Image 1 (cartoon, rainbow, N blue to C red):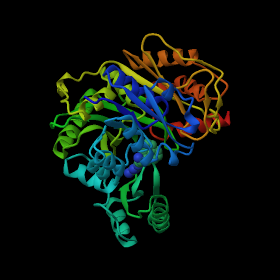
Image 2 (image 1 turned 30 degrees about the horizontal axis):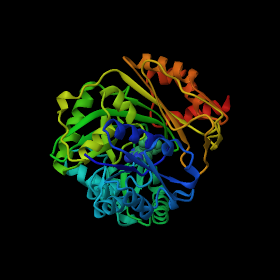
Image 3 (image 1 turned 45 degrees about the vertical axis):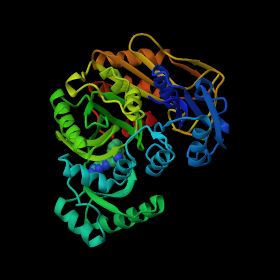
Image 4 (image 1 turned 135 degrees about the vertical axis):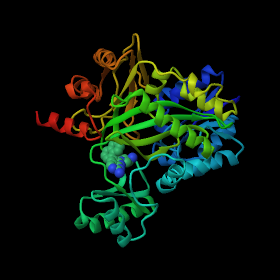
Length: 449
Ligand code: MV4
């Protein structure tokens, strides 16, 4: 096992990783920017190192400073959390080149999945279902026309280096194609420095369902079921559920069997998430994330597993020690992402938190680095707390979430708690009847009232 783990992140996820390390008996090193000197992840770590000024580019993304912090503190492994350097293949490679362990997949697999074209090609060869589309990169407008004629409009042009919704353009008919083509190529070049694009059939009302997998270094792969992440606005997720209200257990088992067999063939290691669009009873793979995700707690609650502990054990060379048959699913979990944002305009609301009271009780979990007296800095992601509930059934989970949201007190800054309360009270949400477009329309309806 590792002697000391450096956590290259901040906020709730840095705390989450510290907690797993502490239970494994591993001391932790926190890194922080000058803006985060008073942050909870620094206070609770065994040691801390200031790695630069507030700007993330100069601190949490500063590879040289992070590697130096690991060297001076004698850390032998680095956990990247999510965001920041977590899916940077060059960083993973550098960590290993310095004789440290990167707690995550191999740099080769991070690189493969970072390019959405190579990711799709790999998944197709492993028998994972895809959206109808181009066979890899589309080189010019003539080829784009030919692909669109074959798969029929509407089509979506996507950047190979994109993901998370950036660099996508829809063409509803041949008349739109040339314009969409030029805009998508230009955006891809300026945003990612890579103008490679591919084309997919545009699905108009899918759900976003993702599968959590975990693989050890000995070829054992298990899945921990799916999460429904359809409730998002402008590609920012607000709320996630496990399991999906739209799936049967048989559909989960079938998809899980396909992805675990595929990843075993690929020799994948550590945690991963395969993203699918689900429409008309069909799954279509779109992207794979090679990191721990923000919404991992809903999976932990229904499976009773500590995913971060599993990541650390696997990185240290331990075997999973159980098989798919040992993974069980119990009840339903919902996560509300509480952000420091105005619940109507979504403008960031950094500032002093004067009162902080987290809800508790049976089946309630709060992952947060907030405390009374903390000043939320304006420099980083606005997520300030994840409120997760677990209950035997989905209606009971919703009742529990309503109860927990009502107990939650964050005074001094506006948060999205009131928006979550409105969602919990909505009959369509309660029916589980939503697609990726539902929340955007819900927010518009609220603005009109
Ligand atoms: C799509 C799609 C419809 N059809 N692909 C957006 C983020 C990126 N991960 C993929 N995305 C989409 N790809 C096809 N062929 C619709 C989306 C999409 C979306 C996907 C998941 C969650 C929220 C979304 C919001 C808008 C569009």
